[in-house]
Amino acid sequence: MVNTAINYLKRNTRYQIDLSFTETKLQPISGDDPEVILHAKDLAELIRQLPPGYQTIFNMHAVEGYSHVEIGKTLGINEGTSRSQYSRARTLLIGWIKKISSNEKNGSYARP
Image 1 (cartoon, helix red, strand yellow):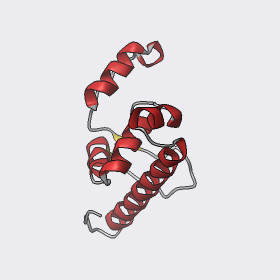
Image 2: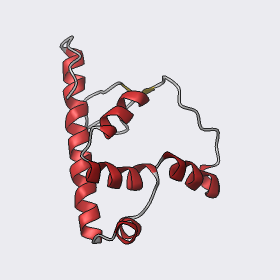
Image 3: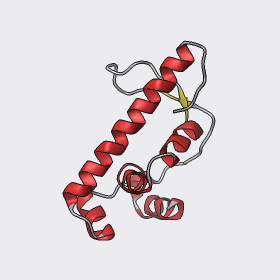
Image 4: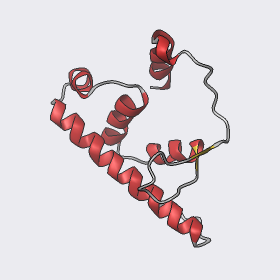
């Protein structure tokens, strides 16, 4: 799946920038969520912990940029199924990230 993402980025000129994965910390875009500091490797590990169906659809939509219609055609599922699986994966990830954030504030580093 990583090679598919890399090939997609190479084909699309709007993404042709220098890509590098460093140990920089991610910050939330919205002020609504609690402040979360998360390494890219930690986020990738959380994504790998998703159930296989959620993980596949989350990666295709959020990482590779496929639309839910394209995902449905590729995987042979309904567009609605793709949307619901993505929503459930996103909800799980947000919950895990909030749990990690609250544990770090309390001095504990337990994983979900």
